[in-house]
Image 1 (cartoon, rainbow, N blue to C red):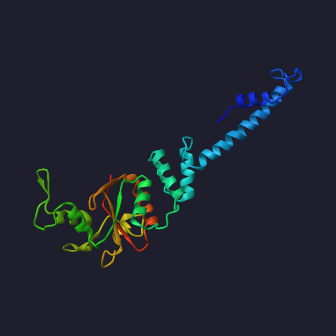
Image 2: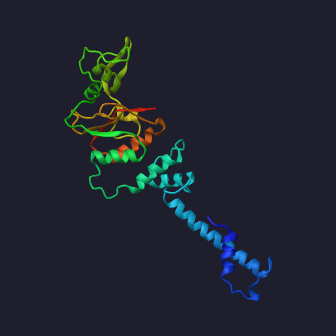
Image 3: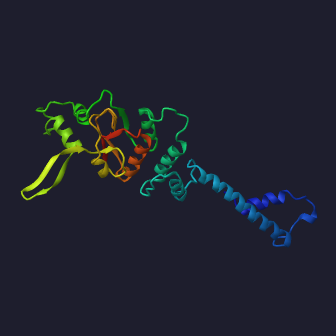
Amino acid sequence: MIDIDDIEKLTRRLYPKGRAFKFPEFGIADRLNRGLSLLEVEAYNDAISILDSILPDNPNFNEDDATAWEKRLGIITNTSLTLEQRKQALIRKINHPGTIKPRQARIYIESQLRDAGFDVYVYENIPEQDPVDVMANALGNTGQYGTYAYGEQSYGSGLDIAIDTLITPIEYGQFQMGQGVYGGNYNNKVMNYLDSDLDLFQDQGENFRASFFIGGDPIGTFADVDASRETEFRQLILKLKPTHTVAFLFVNFV
């Protein structure tokens, strides 16, 4: 930014050096120059402000600019995030799709999620696996009757832990003698909705051929994502993934 004194000094240097151009302070010519300088300062600062607010790549890009660009780009506005986190998401969106052609490839989806500030990894489901088996393998124990120990505490088999973690029981109403439960469904998945509760009842199909995993490193371990960014996280996955696929999340929203 520039102030009026800088413009006024620059203007005076452009006049000839003769006595006729030695304008007395607060004289007519001095006031004219000051008025013109004020307009020039406003024009200059407005031009700089436009440049500052066009791209989130400078320290003068503020929260009002971020909110305006989030609205233009269809990004969820979350004021609980830092300005730097919001700028990360905006830069990723502005650069999308870039020059990369395989935009539905695993490595591209992973790079976009990480560029947006999510510390997660993406894995193809090759060979085709059940998410429960993937987690059980990550725990190092798939035996149904073994135990998975954490410190001195035993939690049961890796398979049991995976089932308890990834499967949500589904109830179908109440009877006079209690409730009826008819199985479960995979939780923590992204198929069609921003609301995870709506996706819970979506049928992922008879097999896992059109699925992939998002989580920590290595595959089957959990990554942490800020709970206040869950909707933003799901929105980005929905925009990036092939429409027919299901993203199974090994993610803790904390």
